[in-house]
Length: 188
Length: 172
Image (cartoon, rainbow over all chains, first blue to last red; front, side, top):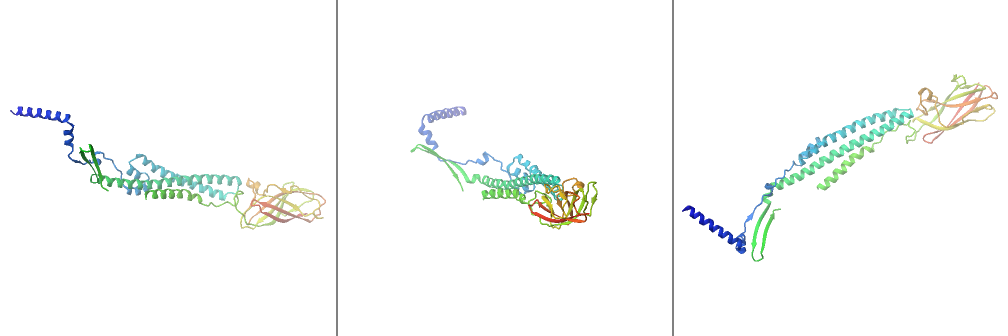
């Protein structure tokens, strides 16, 4: 008895489905009911966000590490040997250049005067260039860490509020205009 | 805000880069290429005569009939070192100087007496010290014994200043 009842329901469902597929009006009428759909995009497409702007202090002490925390790029870690290296070698070079300059000041032999002076100029110029490059790189990566971290903070806050601020709803079919509408709302 | 921060960062970094290059380095006043004006005055100290036998006579007495090198010692009264480049020297023609002949009136390159001992060309006189400028002379028998020949230097230093120094060579 139960099997017979089930069979009858299946037959009726098949007939009604075939009928609805062949009758466009009835099919679209069923979609005209407005049922808002909430799409949680943040959950469906998670985007890892790095640390915030507070990492500028870490970047100041250890160049590149703060930047790595905010952007996740391992190449950022190369900034530490680059900054320390440029500044350190630059200071040593300038120190040797200053020794050469003292030798220049104490020299009386014209040949030695020329030799010490040219060495002093070359070493001091190289030292200044290295210290300047290292310091410039150091400062810029601190600033870049702060800016990148600031955006991370903004994006993190937006992500946290994503579902509350954005919704997508099905506007349904309007038979009079024969149009189908979807509505997106963003809460600012 | 962020854009302004970026600009400030770049400007600050560039300032740090270029500011050290504004550092002024002290100049060696013994450097003939140094762009400085040395302040000093020269005075005559004494004459040393080195004769043909390479015997030095620090009393500055020149024998008659002799080829000799004179080291005319000048004192730098300071306060800066002097750095002599070239110049001329001569003598006042009088009856007493008849028979006094100078080889190199034009001193193309000043060479101080200490050049040989130090092993390089010395053209400077340290403040408060004396240095001998080398010149060569020849004397003939027309010279009067026990006479003085009035000589002078016009020396030009590396700053372009001319220094006139009078001195006397005694003939014995």
